[in-house]
Image (cartoon, rainbow, N blue to C red; front, side):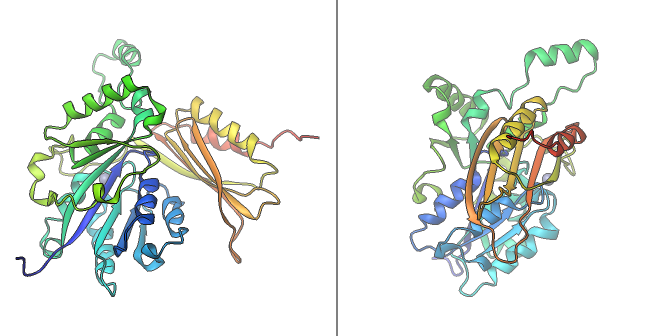
Length: 350
Ligand SMILES: [Zn+2]
């Protein structure tokens, strides 16, 4: 018998828009009385995910049990941000029974798992499992694989072209560290495409890892928690594209926040966002819109050109009604053009 039992922590990784927050929301709603604490990391400082989770009226997630690090990538700020946040969660009375960590969509999970091997953390916590959430629709659409035609064209233009695909690297790094893969949004792909994706993922990961197909983050809590992987003891079996580097960076990606003026109706703006996402190959758009006459704010989430929106909660008393969107893309994203397009007035319906 262990003299001191460590608190298990589950790391939820997955690319931008894979469905991590939806998964965690579902998990909180089916926590089965477990005392959970949450650490949420986001790329782009609007803090949408934390806000969605704060908004759930579940006993499992009272505000002090949720810490948000909306500063980019947890993998780069492990010592400065992650350690103090974990200490705050451990100091809760009563202490959490299980800690969930949602990493940002661009974060690499391995540096985070490594931190669990540090003596200060190791004595108190263990990585119960790394869960990689995959957007089956994005994979099937070729989001993470180099377009052979584009690559040919680039090679023709420059013999010495560095053809590393940053999206592919992040996607693969997240899978390579996983103890469990959730193939989310399988309703977006054909059964054949699903087979192919499962085969590709199994071929990529050099260990036997369970791949579970799901829709909208719906999966039994017992499948997610209690994996008992002790991932911090098993780092060598989790290769990364960045193993040879002292430090990694996220220079391949850009993000910015745009305030959006109040709107008469959401549809024209949504159509414009979809058009911009396609034209500029935007990876992720999310945030809130202020629709005139509506007591609730409109939550907007786009993955590529796929958009979802819903009125998620009323504007609070004392809260400034203010539309804001965070836009994330690969380096070179034409922020000026996107800003200009979003600032243009809409044609009057009259
Ligand atoms: Zn990083």
